[in-house]
Length: 212
Image 1: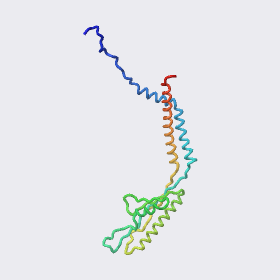
Image 2: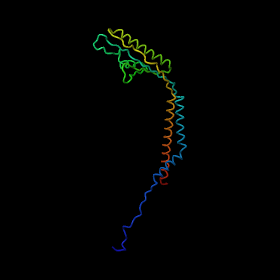
Image 3: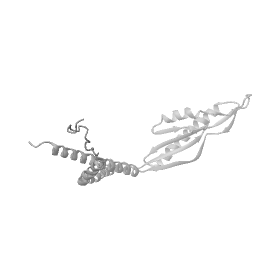
Image 4: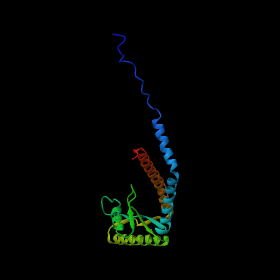
């Protein structure tokens, strides 16, 4: 090969990858957000204020009271049967279905139990909630006593009774208000960041367009 022949295999300058592209893009992103921090902070503060005013003055709801009562159903056994198994005057599931038809009353059977039923309701007044549960219990007890009176040759093991006291718990609207304000703060911050990114992308796009 002649020495005058151009060396087509001469080494080309290596392309050095820019190791800082990602860092620069990330820096620019944060810089753009920082430049629009007033917008982001304004939305992050404005939305919680609006939510607070709404739940406090516009959608204001009074505190409610949840009442619950645990009932043990009457049990009995027949005395003249060869298998005097203990029976309940009414199944807890059936009583739960009947009680659930009442207005604003929930009836549940505690898991893993027999002959027990828990009644619950919600009221605006604690005394009213207690009185309503007492009336429901009185009606259930009277109905079970009538059923037992109609049965013959039985031995009553235990009558329908109330277990413990009626529990009344207050449900304050403060928890809901705090939750709404917290969610509004997060959404306000996210909305501010989203709008800031959109504005930054539009501005960058305009700068890249050729001047007419």
